[in-house]
Length: 111
Image (tube, rainbow, N blue to C red; front, side, top):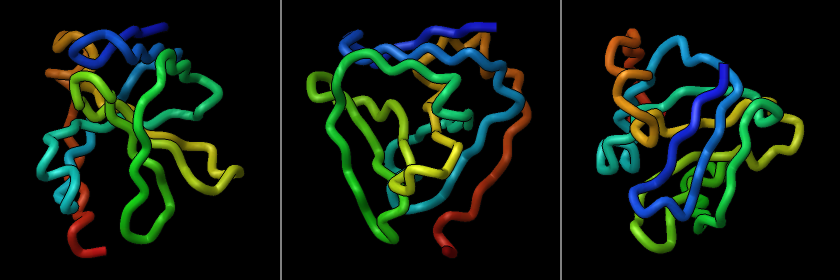
């Protein structure tokens, strides 16, 4: 199934050709500040339209993107080209897609 979401202003649109099975809530220094709810998918199943601003932090394993206009965190991509997983902020999509999903709590602060 295909799901479409966007940042607040609509400059960045994301289409995921996969059904999320859960939502990850992370307590790392970035996620606890932004309130992102993550789902993960292969980059081959995700289409990102529009251009965000990338931010690389900490262990430099991923690039976190946000919209240049409204500032909403949209997704992250791995730095390593052979890593077949990216993160998508579920809060870009209608709540009906993610409110009933089981939550995983990720202790990113301890890494």
